[in-house]
Length: 177
Image (cartoon, rainbow, N blue to C red; front, side, top):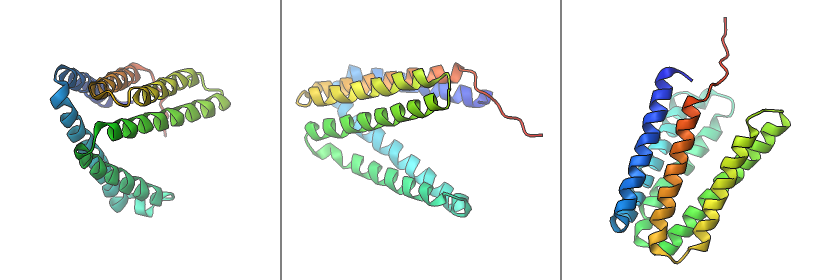
């Protein structure tokens, strides 16, 4: 990871912590702000993936996968933008499902890393387990409206800490001569 990329990851992590604090201070307006921020982030990521597909990935092996990911994330962004008009129970189900799904993917990646005898599989396993726990908390406190913003803030702070920790971790560099 380059120095500029490390600085970017640290700044994004600090921004995520700041957003979590702002959302936690004002839980009533925090709900709408969270929905807006999530939808904008999903739409931007989806558009970036589609742009990457149009400029480069269409001529690559596996380029269609980038197209499908971009369309799916863009659709997820538009779905998230329209979700602020539904009761918070549906948002909790949506959020819980997303956390459980992300945790399952992290655990599967940890199992794969264990098979490859990587020393970092424990961290991936812990990250996946924490994501699943946050997802289960969403389902446990399904009817608590104020808990929705708390769960989102908890997830933001946790993901920010993981992002900052990964920025300080040494990564193997491959040099081509």
